[in-house]
Image 1 (cartoon, rainbow, N blue to C red):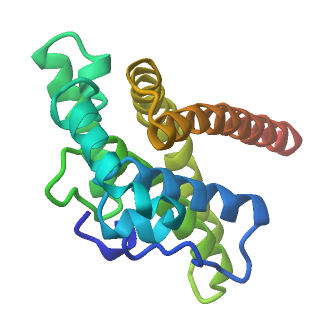
Image 2 (cartoon, rainbow, N blue to C red):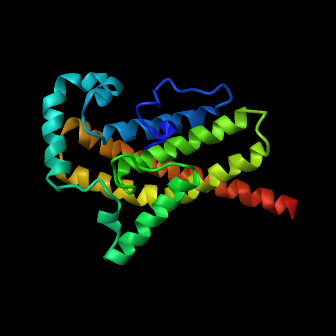
Amino acid sequence: MTRKEMSTESASPETSIDSFDGADEQRMLSYKAYAVAFSYPDKKLFEHFPRYVQEKQGMISEYDRLFRAGLVWLYGAEHTVKNEFQRANLLADIMGFYMAFGLEPDRERPDSITCELEFMHYLILKRNRIGSDLSIDDAREKSEICLDAERKFFVEHMEPTATNVARKIIAASSHPFYAKAATELLTFLESEKRHYGSVDDANRTVEMVKG
């Protein structure tokens, strides 16, 4: 992404905010880790997953076999649309989310799993930064805008893309890194579905009390 906050390179595993909710911080770091895991196995990946550095050549070969040879597409549209009209609408909708926050992909399609994972990481980080800065006007309202974007983007784009990609990887690969990452990603997505369901329940309760 062209904004530094969206980059997996700038979002180190040590990223932290004093007011961060512990669960939010872990979720944010998980999105970051999965974004790195499904990127090309270069220096950045092995800095994040140092235990696999001795497997570099094998991982490069498997990455090429899976993702560059077209065995598994890392792009949501390849799994969820039926025609070019739907594809154009999907990509435009995803870009709408990114542009609303002043972001755009850098040398990558907007529906790539890595871009979508990075965007979720960014939204959680931005929401918590807003919540921790008392100098920001309308901080609560702006934080809720981020949360609403998180929920909608996860349901409409992130979860369908990641679920399809992960299942394809599991079916196509027994590689210890990629098969494990895909399996753990599916578990994480189930946890996220429960998380956003609980957020919706809490918001409905608040609205009932206000009413």
